[in-house]
Image (cartoon, rainbow, N blue to C red; front, side, top):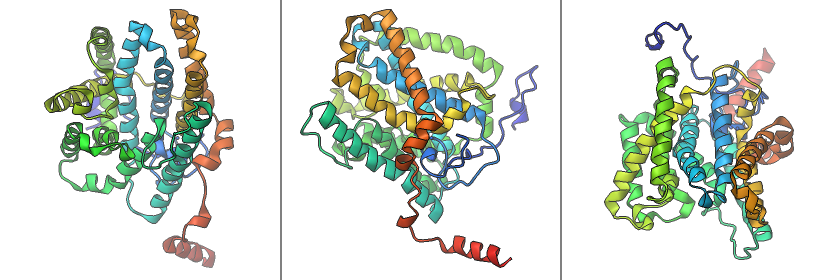
Length: 394
């Protein structure tokens, strides 16, 4: 099947079978063989070391996290620029879906094996607890909100992705068991989009409404990524993205961009319940189309930034402190930043910042929070102990 997907006149080798990056954890996460936090944005916890990393997926994760950072930097500026708000809307249509699809793709081997559950805890749950606490305290200190509570049930700002990844990964065996996982996940998402009673606990609206992208990643195979890498797809993606920008420019003053965040039910956005189903399905279609265009142009060979794809959890969680500090301390209030030159400068700075935060020196400093060993907290796996005894006896 893979060979049949080669473009005419091009003898491009298919993508190799999915191999978890050598450094297990959105993730969101150095060719170094770590085993926890880095798996959260695209590497299954407990997947074991791989022979080599796939440059395509590392490139995709890095480019997606750069788009995430740029989108957050645009948010305080977009209100005075229709062009910037158009870019913001188009980017928000696909950057998290792309990220989540990759996370699902690399979660295919997840099961309830003890070592994988351990890595899920150390690579997702522990960073969630630490950063949810840190962000809440930062909001009190820098933002001046003395009423900001520290609540692990109410994810604040960026930490929603970690709790979502935890829930998605835990349910992975179920999605691998059912006959039609993607349609079932879509039904769950549509029900959530018309159910304001769900509330804000664990940000379940986003967990459920983004769930179909994770499940889609679970069922994808290497040849599906090869399909979008065909030359004709890359060519077609150019007018598709151009059309998306035109439609976005038209739609920006006419629609509520909160639909793109998937964090509210239709009724909470002032729309009738049926609009939740229509808008959610329409946005899923747009998201998948633009995500395919994004994957079509992700490079397959290694570049200087490829290794940074393994550290995207660091960039994801740490850049939020800088973005929030910029808002709290009025860095975006300078008038010249709201001009085209200022907007370009902010975009470049955001991309450079998240790039630096994905590097190895930063990973070494913050590894205690994102990739803790925590051997003291877990019982030793009996099977692993038996293997070590057998090895020692040999």
